[in-house]
Length: 443
Ligand SMILES: [Zn+2]
Image (cartoon, rainbow, N blue to C red; front, side, top):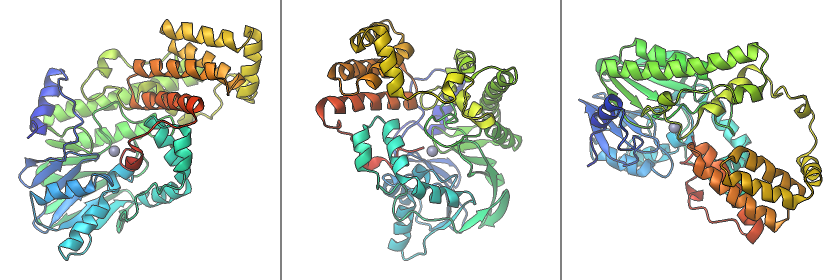
């Protein structure tokens, strides 16, 4: 058995020393309190025994749902009375078909499903943007364009995913068996989040409003995120003075003071970042000035629950700009810009040929100036998209850049650029092991 998640979280938070990864996908069930359990998966499933069946928060993803249900059945044979979707991301709802299959095996009705009313339009949007979602998620996890093209009809929402039976608008309180549940709506990572206060256990199910990573609040390829409401929701949770705090990724946390400290730190970090961006916008700064002028202190980013390993502050800055501003970044050349081909061709001619750009891009990359190296090689590829020499250097430059980055989102996009150049060189997209797991790997 793995170290108990509450002991591990206390150790990581109290010492600040990260000797074990907090995001564990063990499929193991741990009891967190009498009648409360957690299965650590992607996403986790949180369980509360009500005496009239289990309430489960999230169903995990399509690939992990079956194993999660097996772990639950090693703990309790009770029916799942209600499945609460903390939000509609597929790694939280895709396992619901395994819960339905388990009910069928036991001759029981499928669980009642509860979620915020915005979960339903989210599912509709996934159908409207099926091909786009496959493309961006492949890119996020390092796939090539060719692979994405082949998968454009891949059903983004796993077939058999249960739809919500019960929805609410702002807040809903109900008693199931012996236990009261207070469901609260918030925005943050998504526009359809539910966090739940369970007074009997002084417990909060937080969904993805706390992920043991820098908040997924800037995601470069995805719809708007809401950092201000995200911080507000963490403060609303803290006001309940929870003694057990259970997010859908990472570790559960016990202890009133420890939880209060974590929630306040994340909320303050988001509020400060948003405040700095807004101040700069109000003073007339361009997006470029803000991206290169605003940052989060390194000591904050080294906290065990705020490391920029998934998303990162630079992307959140852009997301705040998008939230309050338009898409225009303040540089008049980019209001109605020339095509990439026109820019690349012009720059190559000025430089004295694409070869010069390749050479310079390689030098910059070797010197560690990855931002400039990538820009120069993009001029070259725009000027001569069929050039093998360009793609050979481009592939190396993005591989080096990927190694220098911390966040999965940046690493994935740069790896995808490597894959695209490899595809241009060989005519074959590199193999991608996670293609069939795409429904699980999305957040
Ligand atoms: Zn998630």
